[in-house]
Picture 1 (tube, rainbow, N blue to C red):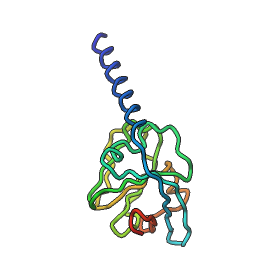
Picture 2 (picture 1 turned 45 degrees about the vertical axis):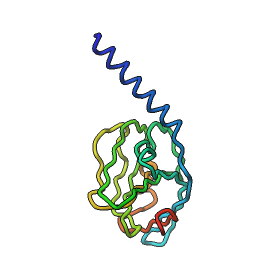
Picture 3 (picture 1 turned 180 degrees about the vertical axis):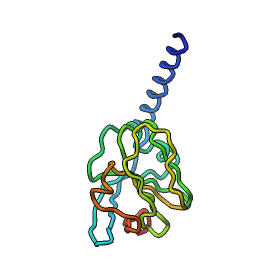
Length: 153
């Protein structure tokens, strides 16, 4: 019982530290559009995660996300990117963006709080996280074009 109490206290302390960190990190804002193969454009108001600290925090601890909002994780060089959902209470769609500014992979409806690794499976330069189900609802597919000034498109 004593070990269980210590474990609960430790987990609580880690959660509090994470919440405190989340309150200290700020994100720049931008817009992003995804153009489908049919020519439809869908606009998102996004936050930018460009530093290692911002990327490691991401959307952790967020309890809500507007339907037209998201977070764009931009990496300093193209690479295979792995993500997870630890401390993230919202189901998300992860849209991996290739070097050509086109959708390279979509992982839909990720599982909140999961520590399972989610991989791009190929070299990409960025990841867009939006509400779970948005990619299907809006008809996004691999090959659709991502338009954003920070990505150079």
